Image (cartoon, rainbow, N blue to C red; front, side, top):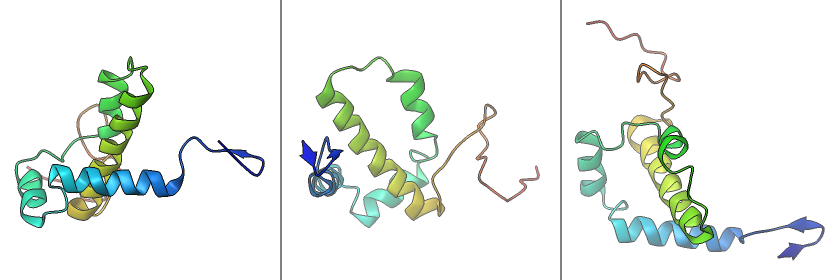
Length: 103
């Protein structure tokens, strides 16, 4: 697709519609369900690193798009529950946290 002089793979309206639809379908828009995911630790990971580690071999455009929609969903849920997107170092610590955890 071309919009003026810029190549556009997907219209923003398509992405946001698919994102909201996916989040609704997965139950992510339900506060009870998203809170359970948070409390169960299912949002406590570096989604971008996971994609690099495990899904870097996906080449089908539809699979890439679906994975990216899920990634956007997880990143939004992390912002809702943690206040920021989680990026972890090799020790599993959130590199964007200003809090020092003492044992």
